[in-house]
Length: 289
Image (cartoon, rainbow, N blue to C red; front, side, top):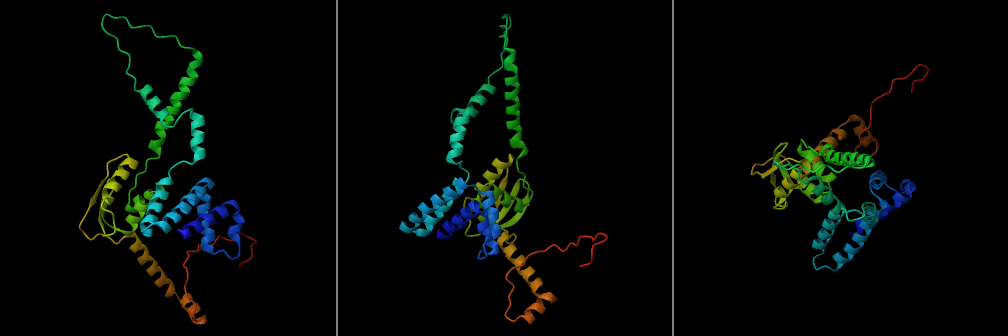
């Protein structure tokens, strides 16, 4: 919990004073990743996370089972990530003149009013004469409703791989469920609309039901998530570890790396980064490097 508090303070600091990330004593990982995270977060969200962590730290210290208290704080933070800030709530109330939940019910009730019907032998009532100045407002309202109905359809996700499902969970702020899929699930079969996996002993019992309900809600189509007894593939975390080992073995076997290791005894490979090897074509008049 204290590490999370320090991280929140660091992100807030570089959010307010970006040159602080370029200080000589700041590691490269904190500078690069911290700058990327600070760019995606806002000060109201960081302040709320700080307050919740500060309160959660006291709960963890006073709880008879600190680990369970810490897990509850993490769940609280995960679900609070989708909540609007107090300033956004006040702005919605001022713009709409009421609570946000009241406006959709009013529009839906107006749209679902039954059409007028004419009985045999009864003359229909003459339509009321409307003011021509009301037409622009009517057309504007119709355009707003059409745009609101078209927006969700354009942004409906459609994951076509298991990795895309895991990425979608991260985008929708389901961090705990995403972690279970990475660390505690062995993929057996996957196709759009159907997912089979073998969970390990650390996966929650309702993982399949929870994942199927969320995918069906987000994609607008029915998803069948089933548990299989087959061995399946290694977990995504195990695949990442294996890929890292293979990459380190290839880099270690490179002649240039071996020459450096022989020249500098005690040297070690701390990190592996991919550098672009593309060479731009030289123009006339440029000296060779």
